[in-house]
Length: 272
Length: 272
Image (tube, rainbow over all chains, first blue to last red; front, side, top):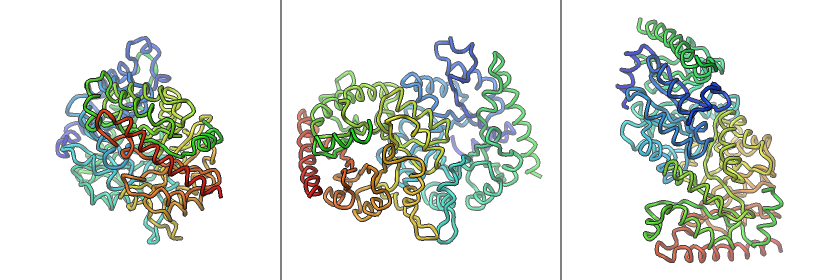
């Protein structure tokens, strides 16, 4: 999917919601566990009920990988039932030297047909650029994450008081453009999102940390939204585990709808 | 496997050789391609012929993952035929927030039974510590890699002229010990290995970049070896693709033997 198609989706749905698919066998409703492929059944119902409100789905690859070869089959089936106009993110946080990254890219962009993959920046240019050689495919590079450990290295300042995540954003703009690269920018501190927006005025940000991790949607929009929105705000647990009864998919729909309505107001406000 | 078992293997075999298993369908001998599982057949013969000289095997997960669910089955089969006294490394470069890292840890340490996994440090403590909660299992943390892109971020100096990879090594010693944590330290510049040895006197280093990437074994030993050796030097392409004819496994055996003999001399020299 290219950038203008993604922007068109956001306008059409008045939403910048990404639904994170973290299907945990210990958390999905009990009645699904007798299904032949419980993980798939769970994700299928979630996708069907939330597709009206979401512009992106982000399967967390660990949850599928943890189930072995069967998990990868479930992942492919989930990918197959996501409507084509919705952006897909393989949340895999891969990154290795050139020839190996190329294989990861082939796995997620060719064998499977994801639109994008999350990538870790630590190994530098030749670990990221192999993912950028695929047309209409995207790298979503970790810049400033929303977890506690983000303070261990990402905020270390160099001799000119420039934190590492600034260096990541500046350097990586030599490798990709707003047409094929996004950044992961955590929602836990709004003013930091503003810093990143100054460094990357046109790039999309994938923003985790709203909801369960405590970030505020209004603050994300205030600091991060630009003329094209250029935000994908992710919610996983808050939506997919809104209920663990037979009504789980309807409950997910309600939560997604609530977020979409909030997003619609923020988009409208930004237009003025 | 625990540290003293690994050290005992190194002494017993007079070797600190790790054989990297990067089974590429485009590079394996033509006669294997008609086998039901060419990747497995290739790795099986390589392992059988090199096991006398290797103390560790490092399957590069990307090469298996690129083949979809079948690739994961091949990986499990390869793991099953590696002799139990040989250390196994899942070269997966994983790393995500807490609950997700825990799932990756379960995938590689429980569903499969790897001794260790390579982990990227960018997301900090809570992305690494979930891997350290498994007895006799190891994290091999990326510190200073051997690729060109390692210069992009790993060597950025903070306000006290401390490069990022130093911070990674120092900080991570609060999370793990020489009993459950190793570091990836590239072989391309010997004096940098010496720097890391000063910062982490007792930890094992996994050293890529000898052979195809140009590093020298003697230099690695000179700067990195300690009283327990504490080195695992990896060679992938130089061994597994020594020949692409029917003699590929014998050719691999010869290359592994050559490296082991060189290592034996270096171990002997260091003892004096």
